[in-house]
Amino acid sequence: MSFANCSKMAPLGSALCPSTSLFFCKTKHQVFKISSQPRKRILEICVNSSFSSKNSKLRAVSEVSAKEATSFGFKNLTETFWVDVQRAEERPLRVKVVNNNDPFSRNVENVAIRVELSNGCVGWGEAAAENLAAALAKAKEACEFLRRSPAMTLNSVFEEIGGILPGQEFASVRAGVEMALIDAVANSIDVPLWRLFGGVSNSLTTAITIPITSPAEASAMASKYCAKGFDTMRFNLRLNLIEELKVIKAVQVAQPHCLFILDANEKYTLEEALIVLEKLDEMGIKPILFEQPVHRDDWNGLANVRGIAREKYGIHVSADESCQTLIDVQKVVQDDIVDFVNVKLARFGVLGSLQVVEIARKSGLSLIIDSMVETRLASGFAGHLACGLGCFKYVNLDAPFMLSDDPVFGGYEVSGPVYKFTNARGQGGFLKQDAVAQKL
Image 1: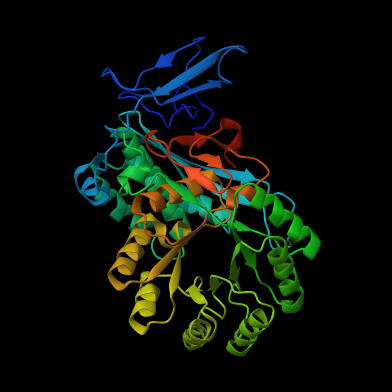
Image 2: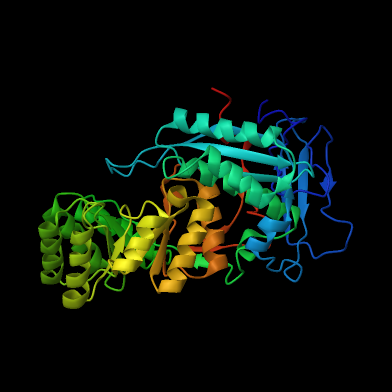
């Protein structure tokens, strides 16, 4: 089965589903109404279809009003909504990264997952992949299960998927499948994801990553971003501390009002991390966050850096790679090791991330939401979740700015660092047909 088979899969416009299946055919112009009930129209999408004649256009109209799109309660929905999957399919998703002279950047080679329910509603997910072939194989296994399984509650489906894709090893693929299922269900009940997750807000502001390049180039790049409204800059520290601090200082001089997040990516020993803090203080640089300064297994080192950073310099420390599982997060809370934990859907899965949020809310632990190198499909889902829950102090969902192309049609609106999520049902976006590779 192919994503390009319009008689079966209807990839274009399928994020906006009616009560029956929305199939694009060779009609020159069709308008698909979501419901027979009168609603205020808030989203109208008009696209060219490769399945029809050259000049024909297809239009999908979503008409979910703000009044109707209320919070349904995600947990309750998982226990009461019955999922009957008609089709499920995985495909490679490849997008080039903009060449920013960062030797650590890589092109996107992820997995797109599409789930279609028997009511015709479609959901999309994205799994970040370190090994594309392995991720595709596991996604295929999950999709095969979904296609052959009988109707069951959403909660039961999640349990089965958790058995097929267990633990941290398959968390990113599990996250992609969970995204697709939740998106399809949200489409079915006419609710945008941010409302489904709590409806606290419909917008967020993200930080932006400045690559470690020359001081002049970094300063110019930061000035460009600041002109667009960004005020929080993130830097990935490596091992050339002196040169990296020169870059950060140049940015600070050019944009003195900006806030800085420094991510050490577990590169330092305890002694080296303390030297970094000392050098930052000497140069008058005070980041709002110092992420993962030591190796992920060095819990004592992490706690020591946190204590000195907070008490001597007034800088918060975050755990990123150290928190791979819920047990790690619980350890951080129990032993009071850091101030923040970095949440990535690709690391914990969607359900696991919600459990991390629950732990944090009970303990007072602060949270950041971040992403892997992903398109607006995955970052959009993470943004919906962050807006709905309203509990993330810092947001770093800037990966789409690093890509040379945007493979997502629709989705959230972008204005500089601000992402605005509309009342379009589900995620509100879907992959363009030509972005999804054919079967390997």
